[in-house]
Image 1: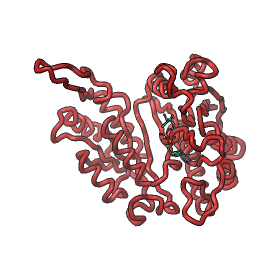
Image 2: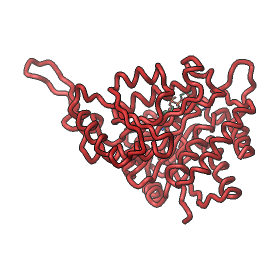
Image 3: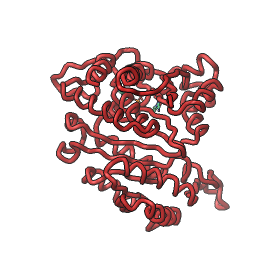
Image 4: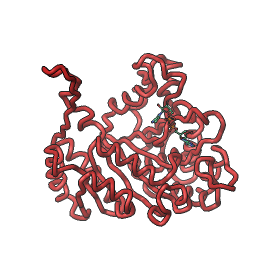
Length: 357
Ligand code: NAD
């Protein structure tokens, strides 16, 4: 079956970095048996400029028809003061909601060659390879009731509601177990079951789902301990699964362990494995148009797309090994360069990955 990949370059450095990932996919198509078509669409500020909406109907049609989507990044100062519905970030939220992307996968992988970029001691993080699976559509971010009310005393009170239904916990737990099966078969579920009823249910449901995955070793951590362990000994983890709020915080913490925002990919998946793949960084307006951006996070997002949606782990690994070899050769963009090195540009980095494939 020919897979349909939709590419949404977006704004700022988006078009520059996506062009390099597209080169990589094109090379896999021509030389390594990838059976896919590449189509292009508009999302974010560029879509506002051209079609008057950050997630236009045409893009919605393309996104629904695609098997997988590769996104650069959206946003920038040009659109910051527009009415809220016209802001580029609204396009991102709209496409995630429209496609019911409920599972966010954020790997934190530190290539040994870049161990010095981390704020932690190199021996703590060299070779780090963990995956955080975060639930994206539920929890306190969406729970009702919520608001700010005035009490009888006249004092104001802000309130939110943490909620998780069994079905929501079960489907994200399954994503966690399945991901662990594709890696080192260790899953750590993170909650706050000692204090929160929503977490108590979370733990109970995760235990129940675990019976279907006897080949995966399951452990549990309270979120405060998980944060501490991430900084103390992050290499103990393979896959972590957690709710929206805890995952938001822990995944940023894990990203910083690697030291470079320009290296980290991510995926947001629906119940059938369809996904939106994007680097974790934004549109970097400060360096846009200069050919200085690191395209590796986007290229590694394409690798995730191959692994998780197209079920082609051997092609994904081919890309990841190629990136490793390029780093071995000493090639560095500005953001991952150590003192005394000469940086390469976006295109040169993409070309080197293609050559290494
Ligand atoms: P940012 O991630 O764009 O940039 C933060 C810093 O990291 C900047 O100094 C930038 O130059 C650098 N950087 C980011 N990606 C890089 C890369 N690939 N190579 C080299 N350096 C890189 O975050 P920001 O500055 O807070 O946001 C800029 C715009 O991006 C805003 O409009 C924001 O809303 C948007 N944004 C979009 C997304 C997304 O599309 N998913 C995510 C975050 C921010």
